[in-house]
Image 1 (cartoon, one colour):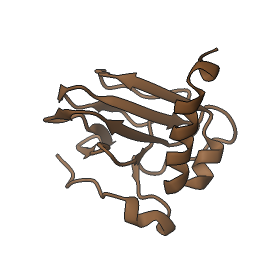
Image 2 (cartoon, rainbow, N blue to C red; image 1 turned 120 degrees about the vertical axis):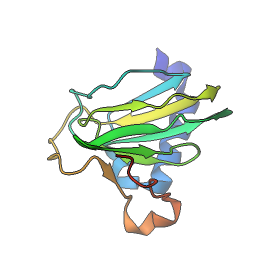
Image 3 (cartoon, rainbow, N blue to C red; image 1 turned 135 degrees about the vertical axis):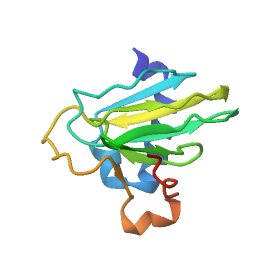
Image 4 (cartoon, one colour; image 1 turned 120 degrees about the horizontal axis):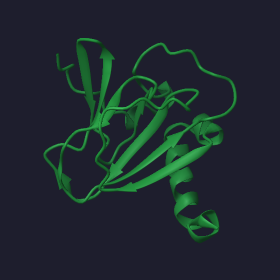
Length: 139
């Protein structure tokens, strides 16, 4: 019922992701759309590979996806208006922010399991112009 009600939003979300990574746009199995999500550090135990995140809205002072790249290294990925590709099987969370924030999280929960190699990714080289590299790692 939700897919029918929000079909236009879903189709736009898929088309937007396809501009950055058309292979992943064909492969993802679920889309989470959130409003003002605040969560504690967690691991996506049902994911079989990385996810893409995109955030939109009038928010400031944070709202990035923080991910533990190692026990002593945390990266903050700014997904405001751009995609970030993160392996949610590493601990991650959204940093505190002010304002109104929407997010779209595209993930895969079925199919072949991709090995865990790194917590953050660059997109395919043919769409690198859409990639905003993460800021310096924060120890």
